Length: 406
Length: 84
Image (cartoon, rainbow over all chains, first blue to last red; front, side, top):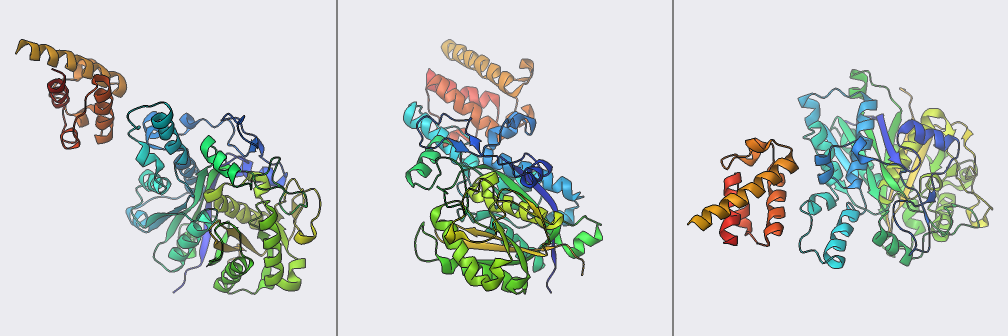
């Protein structure tokens, strides 16, 4: 038996908004969160902009003791989870705690905690590393802190597939609920990319824009890194109906593929396969799709490849599709980015609004889709895809449907 | 012998003050018999405290010994015998 899987709670914290209402309002208003990075000294870097969670005060969310044990990526995971759980108005029972899964995505876990420790050891010649380095760094810490917060004893793990991490996480959670292994899931991802050493590593690989993120524009120069996290509460329609939960939308399909070709250069066939598999899993034809939240990083290579892949998969229908890249608004949050985009896509379906591609300048022949440039737009959205194509060639695509009980 | 007692007392005073300030516990409650868990400190808190003390006194307590330290007195003894 297959359960229908509905979305009953959303949470987000990122440079575009510290909660769901602020995040969505900034999408509708096309107000990008990309700005000069303030939390670290950027004088040694070739780029200055990022998408930071501005004025973030962890002590507003956690006690000192909790903060000792939690790196920022875990804090973002838990803040987003708390908003989503509250939004879903979950009343925990022992049975529900056993029947809930927590699947989170992150690319690098507590990289900034590791960097602090390395600085102490190698630069300051300290003899000992901070005791909590290991529990702060481990990529599963976000998932673990969510289980501990609510006493969730069901299936829980973290997924790491670079920029696709949280789409893989949400897809895994979706299948667990659909196949009846769980009644409910808290799933998404989080990432903190803004530490000096990690930014230097991105600088070296030459894909970060010196100005801003302009997906699908002829003038695009690369991606802009962000930080944050997002979580969704997924549950079986039966569970949601039984407790009278409000329903945002439905997850209907999940497709995965691997390029098996190059460690950084994306492969069109891999992207096409993941989109096709998501629609096959949802048992829908490509003509049903109205909106795609693109991977849309703003790099020359990705955006041209993704456009070609969409045109190949959708044929004539690609001319009717709206395809936007919300990374132009919230930055590339790596392992947390797909979860943020899943929230954006869910809200697009709920409000029947196409999120815009911000910072758009000039049309590129190689990116000749309707990219919803610089202004959100009302429209009919029944089905949507959300694409993620990671470094390492690991692709994950989710298919969503507007909520309709029938 | 007297020297040992003096060292133990000095270390106890230092340990008790550190526990009192870091764990926010009234100084008089920190007795040699007190177990860390009774002072509201979990195993990681205790490990953090003893690691700080290792650095403070410039000593190294082996893992198998550090993990067995459950009371304030045991911590004091473990430190004292290494600094005499």
